[in-house]
Image 1 (cartoon, rainbow, N blue to C red):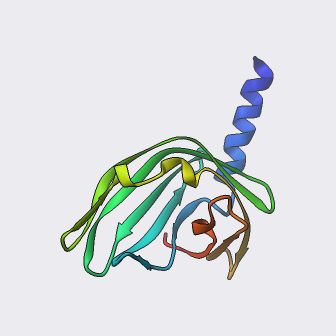
Image 2 (cartoon, rainbow, N blue to C red):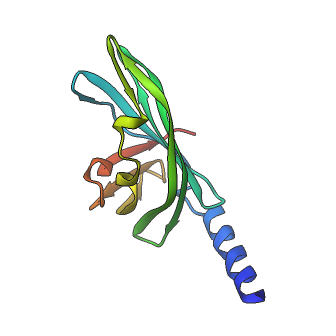
Length: 138
């Protein structure tokens, strides 16, 4: 039991000092007339939230919680039991969690930090839609 406790504390300490910790924004994309951008909040305690935020003529947010994350020097891994709440409305169209595959965002990406840890580039992601360049938002 003592080893597990020490390992858990080292894991949490490692996450808190990790340069990945913080809020990240992706560029906006338009799909089927709906414009979104993604926001990821990577938290020092080993959890993260993922949001799809309507922009342009779209309003609202799909918020995904329940993720955990881990990283080494080149790989960022997402796991957990995520759940989704919210809606995004674009004119007469409404997107909600029933139209979203929550589990599709689980997996891993290769990453590189640049620009003084202000830019995060993810490639080779299990879910190809996460292959993008993120900008630090906090």
